[in-house]
Figure 1 (cartoon, rainbow, N blue to C red):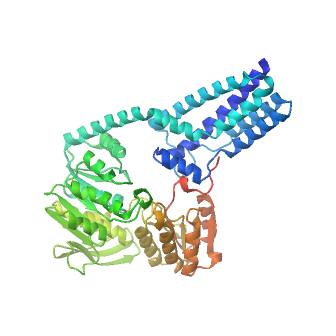
Figure 2 (cartoon, rainbow, N blue to C red):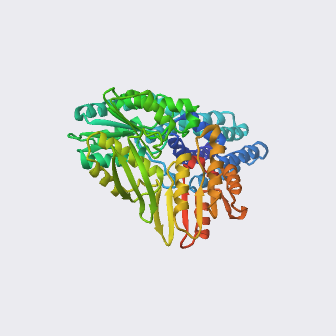
Figure 3 (cartoon, rainbow, N blue to C red):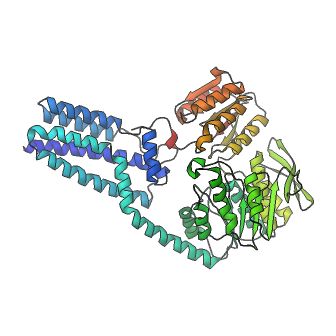
Amino acid sequence: MILSWVIAAYAVAGSFMVFRYRLRHYLRYFQQEEYDGKRFLLWVGECNAFDKKTLVVALLAMALTSFVPYHLVITAIAATMLAVTAFSGEDPTTSGKKTLIMTPRAIRIYRLSVVLYSTAIVVGATAALALGRHGAFPVLWFLLLLLSQSVPLWLLLATKILSPGEKRRQRKYSLEAKRILADVDPYVVGITGSYGKTSTKHILGEMLQTTLGTTFWPDKGVNTVMGITREIREKLSPGTEYAVIEMGAYHQGSIQKLCDFTPPQAAIITAVGICHLERFGSEEAIYRGKEELAKAVPDDGIIVCNGDDTGARNIAKGNPKMTTLLYGFDNSKEDLDCWMSSYAVVDSGMTFTIDWKGKEYQGSAPFFGTTALSNGMAAFAMACALGADAEFALGVLCSHEPVDNRLQVKKSGGVTYVNDAYNSNPVGFAAALDVAKALPAKKRIIMTPGMIELGDRQEAENNKAARKAGSFCDYAIVVGETNRKSIAKGLRDGGMPEENIFLCNSRDDAFHNLAIVADDGDAVLIENDLPDLYETKVRF
């Protein structure tokens, strides 16, 4: 009897080690879904992200202990196999495109999940052994089988239990950030749009910092309440005169929440596209979501909108302020306040001419693509409207380096890489293709997993972009299964031979094929880099 308890304890220990290992892996994906339980469970189901190795071991052990008398031996072997599995996998904190970051919140979720699971398995194993020697081990393995497949549920349960405390903690930090913001009292410029937010934020931040006064802007693509809260608490210092706040949204009300948190006195609307259509539900909802920023600006404020974008133009028309400015390329209606009368691609970037208040400003900048120029115009118009000297603002624009992974053009080993790996959208994809087409090259290669979160437009938009790529690219490397069919068909329809289309299951496979295909003098467009959530295979 004592031996039975020892062996059972060994099996429980093996299961526990596997649980801890799997828990960290699931937590990485859960974190990427921003701890959204519904989307996380949807991902688990769509990707069939179940613990298949543990499932097989537990099923075999349960079957054998039901019909074979050597319960203890079978259980010991199976438990050893579980323990080996637990130590044979990769570390989620160092592996993957986006690693697990053990933030204080992640640590709390992890620890509570461990406590809950440990309690359940100890109680369950004790109850199983109470059945007696002959029936105990099949029941025990049935229990371990169920628990091994329920790791996502333990994460969700722990998150639910911790939710009240997390809300209190977030509220405390947010109130602290609001107090800091109120004490410093900078002039707040809010920026939103379906694309171009981050780049515009960085350009405008640099312009205001150089021409008008000390300016605060959150790092990289930080655009949520908690992200901005952290940046304000850590970086907003007394004497700051301007704050440029990027405002992201996945549904209506998101931007309004950000506006309540950081009330804007001015706003830039870069575009109203179909990004995150899957989350918003409709194009009308996207429009209303972006409009929340314009509505939050006081009547004596400033709004700057993309005149080439119908949605942004309509927002400007429907929400006029004391200063309402339109920018863009197409001035056929002669109603743009800031427009680009000419531009061209050169080896070092782009040359351009900006028309502002009847005067032309000529410049060159080390970035590529019409979207980059559009973002530059938005920042230029806002800076000038706030009182910046146009020549000084132009100088900042001409020296601005592109934000990482946003149409960066660099050479490496004789190959020119166009790195546009950050979240792709139809307009940005088209602009990146234009850049790749304009660059001198022996061969042109595109590597992409396509675009996501476009709802029922996703297949059509990926097919459209692929047709354009297929019309001039020599090779294509399609990453993952998410958009494989629509992209491959589009490439073929665009004229690319079937043998020049490489279908890869993972990012690593894609780069392996790229190394084989790419030679000196080639141009490679890396368009989008989907998070691990969209990888073909989940390694469990």
